[in-house]
Image (cartoon, one colour):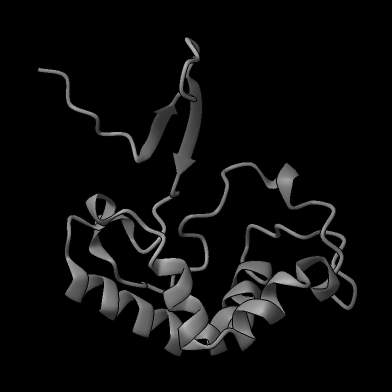
Length: 132
């Protein structure tokens, strides 16, 4: 038996009356602590292994408008997104999904702190950050 132990997944779709499939690859990068749906605050957890993807970041402006939108999102906005998740993906655990949404809502205020912890880690992911 071949078990998939990889956190990445692929979804194959096909338009009606078409022979070819399209693949959509999902790499949750251990988002929400893999299947635990928890949020351990480790600055290097879930980041990309190669610093080259971060090396051109110069400051907070490079995170906008995503960071501000996340910080200002209301719980209704989070629920709007969560309702689009197929129930199979969260194994029909609606109580778990509710806890996840509520936790995401509460944690909006720590986004910049977590980025700062990553930025000031010994890994030095943002060598061009102004004000270092």
